[in-house]
Amino acid sequence: MSKIIESRQYETIKLVFLKAMWKLYPDYDVEIQNSLNNGSYGEIFFDGELVSLTKKEYEKIKDEMKKIILEDIPIEMTIDDIEKLKEKGKDIPREDIQELLKNCGWAKIREYKIGDYIDYFYLSPEKRTGKIKDFDLYRYNNGFILKTPMEVYNWEIAPMKDTPKIAKAFQEGNTWEKIMGINFAGSINKKVFNKEIAELIMLNETLHSKKINKISNDIMKNKNIKIVTIAGPSSSGKTTLSKKLRLHLQTCGIKTLAISLDDYYVGRANVPLDENGNKDFETIYALDIELLNKNLKDLIDGKETELPLYDFFTGERKAKGHKVQLEEGGIIIIEGIHGLNDELTKYIPRENKYKIYISCLTQTNMDRHNRVHTTDVRKIRRIVRDSLSRDTEGEETLKMWNSIRKGEEKWIFPFQEDADAIFNSSLSYELGILKPYAIRELIKIDIESPQYEEAKKLVELLSCFVDIESSLVPSDSILKEFIGGSVFYNY
Image 1 (cartoon, one colour):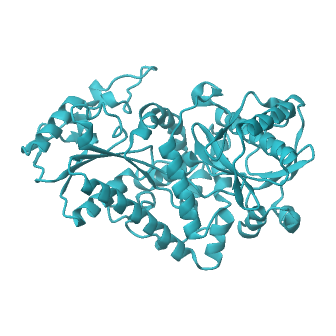
Image 2 (spheres, one colour):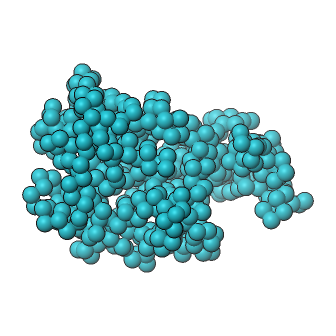
Image 3 (cartoon, one colour):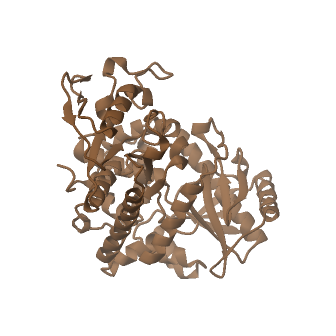
């Protein structure tokens, strides 16, 4: 239930913000773009041109929002029938909604009314504006940040943590969208209907390759770099990026040696306990950091080194490892969730390390006012991969997700701004590919299950995207890490 509460609070304050904007600046268009700094980042436009409001103007909007909340205005759902909305479509004064209704089939879009303001949402807000507990709104760069209480912060407004590198990565994703000629869900579906989706897929994959090539060139130019670490949250595509980066470096004549952090587990019996007394496999201290650093130093010094091998069946390290030696001028690549944390490689000088942060920073949204949450896309990726490669049902994956998110908040996100490069693994077309695999798992979840509401929400999100034939996805795509058929995997 907590996630439903969080979602309703967010949808309600978003609706209140849009109503306030409509009242104060009726000629401006609002575009809510992506998550950022523990909130939602958006921009304001006039006649297609970006408008940068002042701090004073945002304070004025904030005061208007407080008035709307204090008035405790009812929020009415006026239309929840897609056919009725389609009949009304041409009369809706927003091209993004018109395109969505035309190209999104049986999307679960609904019309809501708050006073004399009407908007279109997919997720349900509260019944009244007075239900808002707290919020914050402030100017950021050329746009704004809108914040609501979050469960992971004990239902408080999340603290401000500036992440300029992540912001830049999202801006780059925005540029990619323009290159591909897409903006919202309707435009992607239109590509499918017009038989232009294969070209979009290849263009998106080429942009990924171009980014990997830039990263490999940066590494190659710096002769001090001996170790490359790749880290990111669950279902970001770390393993595929690691393997593709090795190929790019190899084409430049640089030999690489991959080290798996899994082999450095301290052993099941020695794993530290979390605050609830359970074994914490996510903590960095579940790894033998001293042995890892000794191995790394020996390899950098050109010594033949025996690396450990971990046996997940016994939960212990094997008695005998395997011997390796780093070639002269070679680079060690380490992939794992703790790669950005200097504690992992604390005896290796910073100038000898190049850190890559990878995440699925979703840029393609439903429309101007409804974004596709990054964590939802990663969740869908994980459901598909777990069901195909680990025989784990979607319900089990959803049960684990809160624990996964807590680990990310503690061990990954605090270090993301220390990255030398950020790789956005999001693919604009991916929900159309993932849809049939994910829905097959989600519809199995019983209505009595605690995971039912979350499953329903994900199904409704996926319903807005048209199915895309999975055979169109290249075999080396990051997406193949989740649907199978990758050249880098056996499933």
